Length: 152
Image 1 (cartoon, rainbow, N blue to C red):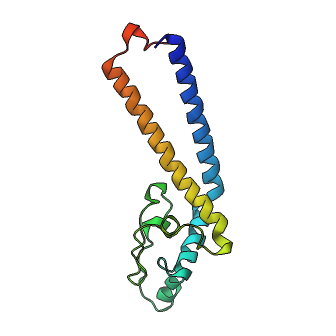
Image 2 (tube, rainbow, N blue to C red; image 1 turned 120 degrees about the vertical axis):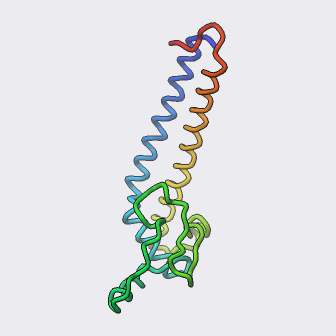
Image 3 (cartoon, rainbow, N blue to C red; image 1 turned 180 degrees about the vertical axis):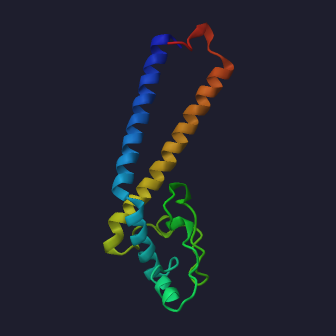
């Protein structure tokens, strides 16, 4: 690969990464997991797909310790694929919006469901892209490039 082609390849991949990062930032800014996650948790509780956050009020009113908030409804984006097993009556091994889709969601939470699903799949795509790119660069360095084309 000649240095000019390599530089064009570098610019193209940089533009792709920039577009992915800007898209992810805008989707997560719109999705705002704290608000959307709460609405989806409540909608899933109403339909019986996961624990019901409204049940926590009854625990507090009767001076009982409520079960811990399931990690899926926590703030960490890494835990987006974990299930909700805090209520034995309504076990959910994966988030309901990934398992059931948004077609069964309430009309009030349809926008939030679509935004969370898109952000999840866009995160997976970006992660896969960056791991593949990183592995390719590492393999290229390991094998070496003929003619010293590795320098710009």
